Image (cartoon, rainbow, N blue to C red):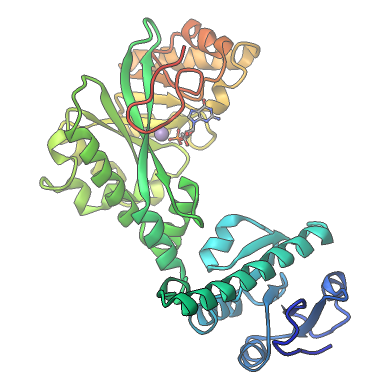
Length: 386
Ligand code: G
Ligand code: MN
């Protein structure tokens, strides 16, 4: 097997990273009359081949060293920004792909057809990128956007730039009146689509504060235009509690303490976050209220309630799901709610999708309801639909 020249437009040249043998099972699975596969073992070989021969798609085997893959992805982002990298990974998730700035991740145990399909899509993307460059040259427009390195930092920058807040109403269980809206992070980014993907990327880069600041900046713009009595619930990452900007009197949202409730999730361990309790205390001194989010999602029981003494708790949708048909869940939610009430804490049930769940929440004594049944998150201000 070997590499051809550009006069072979119908063919796809794949460089398989992490394999010393052309008889590698993955190489055999990929090769067909139109797909040429060449193998190479390490970073140095890969860089040399990419520089000297035609390569349309890089495929990295699970055993290709992760550190070398990161180094290669960084180098390719500069030297060959249009060259797609497909990564075989035990955790074939979009996040890994975005984090490495690679084109796509395929789970190691996926069928061969899935990998072949990813390679075909990658090869087409590569063709398209080349054609767009030719078109740009032809029309005299500037193709700079295609040639910028796509490191994780710039992926995150783009996600933060395109960040917006969807609102989801929280209504009173008794009369269905809007009590508050939760601001939910959304992004227009292609690579980091969901909030957890944005936050995971930010965590990897040590840039969680940048995301939190952007969220609060957008939330402040909303809060200042607020002509409603409703409260605004804003999600905090535990690390945000140590951000000086959160506590700065001149920072966004600082002037709207009475309107804002910060949600702190139960999912993360607060013990690992230095200054968490102190951070909450500082917020409270400024009159900001706290909600413990995702209660019952599995992590720390009632511990965070004791530590944070929140004004609200939000019962996780995993507990709400099927509440009307599951006696154990009903007992649990009823007991949780009554303990919270004894502590002076108001209870929100989130993720309500059916009328049965809504009625069961009311029967359990829950104070406020949130979920698709009532309204999906949307641009300000989504209408209630029940
Ligand atoms: O962790 P937190 O509770 O802040 O996350 C809320 C997430 O749940 C948001 O992304 C929101 O879009 C989603 N969500 C809101 N209401 C519902 C619902 O009724 N069903 C489901 N499945 N998801 C919901
Ligand atoms: Mn939340």
